[in-house]
Length: 289
Image (cartoon, rainbow, N blue to C red; front, side, top):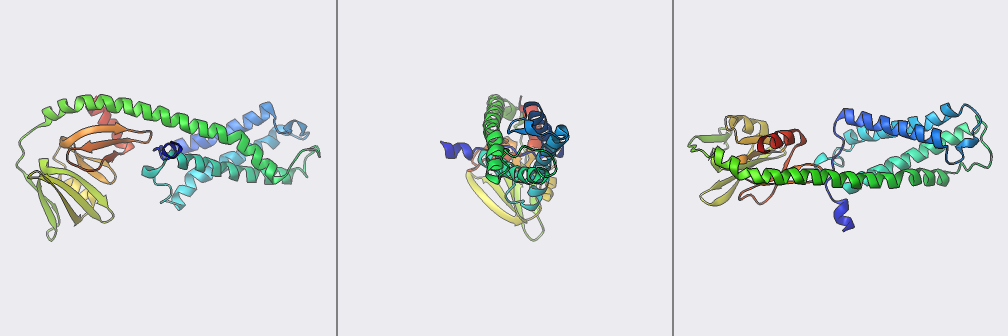
């Protein structure tokens, strides 16, 4: 149960605006909380208390900014958005809290010699680990679990509504099409009618083409950019570049499902589901709802 929950899909903050906003709000919250309630013996500070407490807010902002903007660029494999989960989000939050606690300890240890703080105040490193985690870990975990459930239920509800309308749209889009498309290069290509094509999947420098022909599933591998393949099929209104790694033929759409991170579609006769990018999600919803 716990393992399943930790592996549940969860969206990563992908827009710069969202990351800036989150880092800023976190810094402002920490500053305001410490200034108003003054826990952990902060009331004993005698020298320019608002400025001193501001340091903790800036540390929080700086760590979150570093974690959201710089780490994903350095560790691209770890921060793949399509594989981001609840567990990764919680552990990522714990990492940030530990980083914040280390800097908070260093900041307090340095300035305790510069400002008047009662000697009884504990400035030990374990103490700062404890207070930072005690303040942050439970709210973070609760917030992640709450958002996962809320986002998942919202997408599942819309997916159910879409599924009710799929058959209607498929009946409206049925047409006779005898145009043969040649997908690939002169040396290596696949020929297919539009309605025979299920999807095209990008795998590095190669494409996997899945075709339903004569009541059997065919898989072809060719060397070609996905954008080039899509441009060949651009006249087909039911074929969409629905994800950075997939082009799918919505004539074969069978079912839509949703989770906290994104939507997925299931095509008839295809043994795997296809993820839908967040940028394409609105187009999907507008078309089928």
